[in-house]
Image (cartoon, rainbow, N blue to C red; front, side):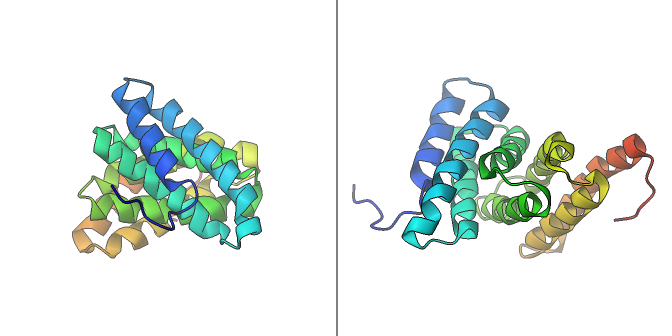
Length: 189
């Protein structure tokens, strides 16, 4: 079997590691979060040395995790939550820089999920849950950060049709409604 002459940094090991962990019956969330965090940390360290944009590296790692999850028949919501947590942990960024990195990864997750016939709404819910898991520790304001991510998720889904975008918006609304109730905010974002 001939391999791709220029694979994305960290792409194949993440996919293969995700498939292996899921087929071995491991904890989907933890397995994906750990694999993505390692992949992001390694790739971000090497990105500057080889002239690869960090956003490309993050997208490659996130896309590979989605591919592995779908190949193994894993729970896409748990895997997407793990991707979000893994990106945020692996990047070692805080504040707006962390959110920007997650936003890039999240758009890739939605696009890769839709291209492969997966459930983009479940992926969106998991991504938002992952952000909520880590937001305060990263110095992010929970409500506005989640609303911004939700908008990005719907925009990415819109590329695959209005019904895909509506499903993602509905999933995001369910998560954001819980955030609003928990934080006492009334923002419509």
